Length: 389
Image (cartoon, rainbow, N blue to C red):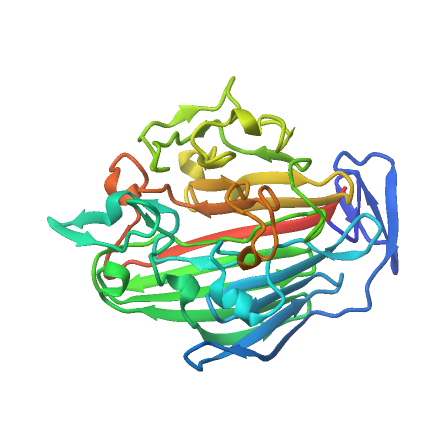
């Protein structure tokens, strides 16, 4: 259930300045904590300079419960999210760096907006209207997360902030020019982050092009609900709203099959500790690194549907995600190795839930299309809800 209310008979109740929480089933009282003195706000300050001398700013969104989200316009990156645990103590729940130098390197894509095409494209190439386009190959033989200098390495232009009585937002825009990393067309992209008093962080993506191109955008935040630096996430309990997933070959490209999760280690339809079956997972580089096909019917097209629910038992923190996208890449930090470039985070130190279209969709016609044409608008939304159990 969400911070700051009590669920009783299907109603959300606020008890003066003191807020009462119960479990999701309306069970026994778990925790009482006082409402924060914070108000909704958005602030901006200088954060650093790129090696080319370009200025980078930091934007901080804060809600009435003290939840804070920090972002920078380099890579449209989420650098920090702090939420209360069941004792009401704020803690950092994302992986990242303490300075801009770390964010500028960021080999593991902590918190970034990935594009022009997130995830992998086989062989670094695709064909549109009979013309083949060759992309950068930066993941073995394949193209990953937009290439060598993808959206995560670009300085975005702040596109304004907004503040109301119960929400604050910041937007970033970027013009990806024709031919960048091999992609056709000038692509105008707008990403908007909004934090409200219901402890929801909403990310809205919008893009238009002047030439047919492929687009697949996501956020690549690594989560550890016990807190940054607290250890691995294998004890987190996760459920993913997907009866099918995409098996992959030995280069992590989908085979084209939409396989059933039932009776396999991939079955997360009911809550399970991340570490329970992780050693049995095939094709993920030592853990989960697979795209799940979300359960959505035709009437749900373009609407928000449930993605996943994650609970960290010790802190009580809960993360729930909804999206308009057809899939989500579940990644368990298999390649984190504890080096300084990955902020000392070791294998399984965080997990990602990257809402998206399917990997290699440009080369797999049976997958939902990622082709964007002139006159069309790419639109996608994902909502993260933070609460305590």
